[in-house]
Amino acid sequence: MKKITSVKETLRLFPDTTDEITNNVFSTERIVKAPSIDLPDFLKPNTRLKMDGLKLLSHLPKESVPVAFLDPQYRGVLDRMNYGNEGKSREKRRCSLMQMPEELIAEFIRSIDSVLIPSGHLFLWMDKFHLCQGFKTWFDDTQLDVVDLIVWNKDRFGMGYRSRRVSEYCVVLQKHPRRAKEVWKIHNIRDVWLERTKTKEHPHQKPVGLQGELIAAVSNEGDYIIDPAAGSFSVMEAALSKNRNFIGCDLEG
Ligand SMILES: C[S@@+](CC[C@H](N)C(=O)[O-])C[C@H]1O[C@@H](n2cnc3c(N)ncnc32)[C@H](O)[C@@H]1O
Image (cartoon, rainbow, N blue to C red; front, side, top):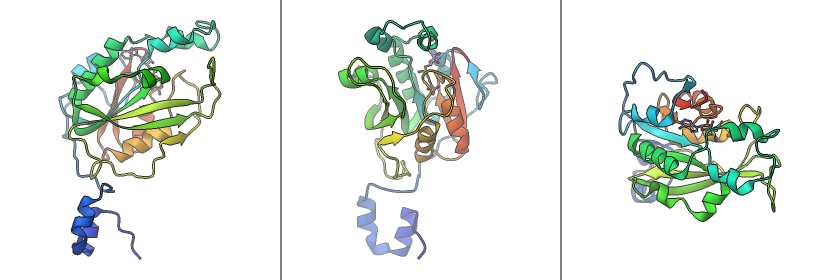
C-alpha cells in the first residue's frame, strides 16, 4: 500500500476525514514559504564571514529567513565554574573567545526576531544555569515564544563540581503565529539526542546531525539559514547537507 505523506493527499483519498485531519496537530507538509532576498555584495552566502553578528543581522531584510541558530558565548559559565584551569590547557581557547554579556545576547535575539518570517524558528543553545534560573527577559520585547527543548547528549565526560556534564540544551523558540501543523514537518526527532561530534575544531562545537534535522523540519530546500555567532560553522555544514543556503559569521572568522 502506498504510504500517504501529506495532509493534502489524505484529504484527496479520504475526503470524509477532513475534521479529523484538520484537527490533527501533525503534518508532514510545510506550507510556509520564505521570500527571495537580495543580499549586499559583502554578505557572501555559504562562506565563513569574519564580522560582528549584530552588523550582519542589521543588513538582512526584515521577515526574510525561516531559521536562525544562536549559540552565545555565555560569560556566566566561566564566572560560575571557576575551576582554576581557566586560561590553561584546554580552557585556553574557551577563555580567549569574546564573551557575551546578557544585554548583548538579548540584543542578538531582538535582531533575530525582526529578520525571522512569521512562524519562523530560533534554535537557542543554552547553558544549564540560564536554563534553570530563567532567560525570559531576553525575549520579552519580541514575538518569540518557547515551544520545545532538546537535550544534546554529547557522549563526552565534561566538568562539574557535583554531576559531570555530558549534556547541552537547545531551546526552540517560534515567532508568532505559533503553530506546528504545516510548519514543522519531521516528527521523529528525539528530545534527547545522542551525537558525538567528529572533530574538535572549536571548544563549543554543536552537533551537525541534530542541527541538520532541525533545519530540515522547519525550512524548505534553498532557504537561507542564519547563525550570527557561528564558531566552527557547524550550522553551515548542517544547512549545506540539507541543500539549504547559509549566512553567518563569527568575530574570529
Ligand atoms: C559558543 S560559540 C559558537 C559555537 C558554534 N555554535 C559551533 O557549533 O561551533 C560562540 C561564538 O560567538 C563568537 N562571538 C562572540 N561575540 C560575537 C559577536 N559580537 N559577533 C559574532 N560572533 C561573536 C565567539 O567568537 C564564539 O566563536
